[in-house]
Length: 278
Length: 278
Image (cartoon, rainbow over all chains, first blue to last red; front, side, top):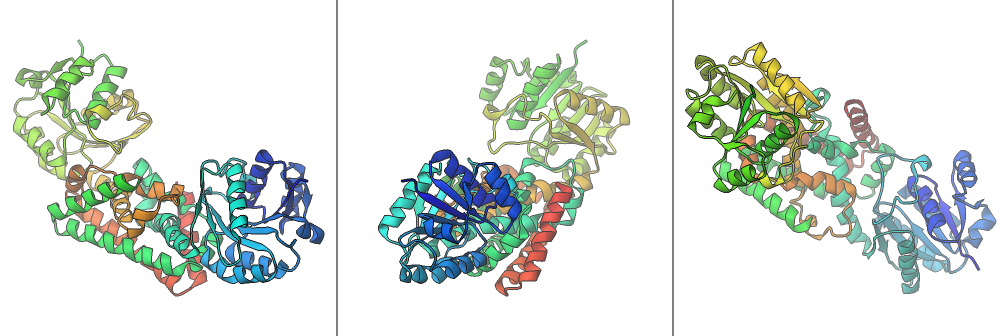
């Protein structure tokens, strides 16, 4: 019999999950969203088979929750008694400690499997209209096993996300995920947003080299979402900001004081680090 | 009669100029470089017609100096009496005040035209082997008229660089150029180099989203060249580093103190600025 997947939240990520599941499996897809329009569009386009009602909740073998962190926790806890026993719930939030800490024990107590997840892919644009079935092609899918998940459930999800086109599935802890994501993604958004605040930004037309474009691309962000992600991962992110600021000061002082050898060494260390870690 | 162009320094920029001139004009091209191998390769590949000797210096109608800032000034001043009267010399350094201040008056005194120049294009790799004839396709060419250049000479160079494939030629002052370049290019390299210094960078495999790749791409830089460029533009660059550090602290404190509204406003301002200025 066909498996049923319920997707909660048909934004960029949830919508792309629906399209990727449709493109790569024969699973039945149920959708849930606060927007009636998005639901009817998704059904019209064939990305979902049905709009999920209370009964749908109890039919799903896999539940993907693609909401912001706070609503993700609220949704799972509120409905924890209504899911099918033994089903696997995966949240798709960009922070994992916050979600896992609040959901894992409850899931276990209610006989459902919970696995933390984070698809490492995105766009500068939000919403279902930007969703696409190859958003995750070749990307990393992070899975966070925890007190609420069995080894079987995690293995099943590894296979499931691999089928959807992810290039690799990485298992890690919530703590390790949040530290890494603070560096690779959240810090990038903070720096990009801070970069564009220079008064010179208003005058740069004609001078915009590729480096400027790279450094400022993700300043075009969804401030509602990133505010929540940053605040739910404040510790690791603040440490990363402090880290880059301390390094920026080393370069700054070497330049201000004309210390040529020190400046060259700082730049050389950065180049070698980049060549080593990619 | 065919015009003769002399290119001094066949690195990435000088080599690409040779190839672009070859592809887009019928000018005779003379090359000068400290490396015998580069010169013979360039001649073998047909990128230059001849290796420049003392006589070549006196034949060139256009002289492009594609060296680092200090050697650029040294080369022009040392040879200022040997160039053809009325020829146009354009330097291609990434800093303009330093070069123009030292060269303009001398050029004028010796009856040669000097125009400051900066092709806004580059690669993460240095050297003639990475040169290509379309490196400048669609890019901005910055020209800095000064006390050593006539309006005719600047107009001629506008036409010349347009023929080579540049998308636009922008005229500006040395002071304005150096302020803008500190923001759009030099700061990007400093930030990228500082970004990669986090201890987390050594562990990020599997977590590297597009934003990480963007933010760290130009950390793979030529430290010899950038050290010189940064030190020759220390004032504007230090101001830009101080600027981004002050903004980073605003985000940092809002995150550390859980000030949700302030954080959302900071991110919104960044997004709106980016949408406005591109």
